[in-house]
Length: 94
Image (cartoon, rainbow, N blue to C red; front, side, top):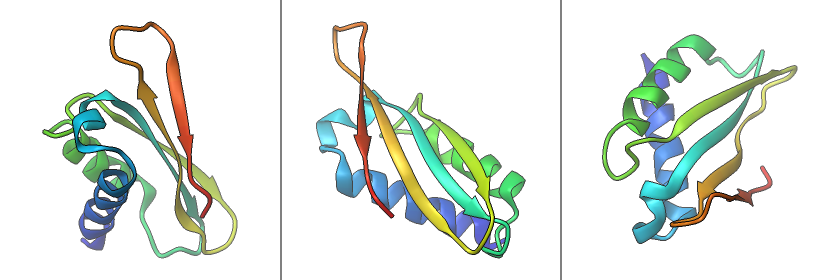
């Protein structure tokens, strides 16, 4: 099940782009998965949901978008502002 190792790498990408003290504010991790990427989307989503429910994240959810081709990338991260009702998006190009 290589989807688990892909999910772990996605979590490492999130950790690399979000300050450590803000990882608990991540509420969404959007991933684009191509039909020819060699990934089973349901398995990847299951693994991501499991990992994102644990510290340092705790409440983040994954959103997978299926695309044609062999793309596999973190499309964007969404963080909740502490003590504020609004949210901030952190976008990362492929």
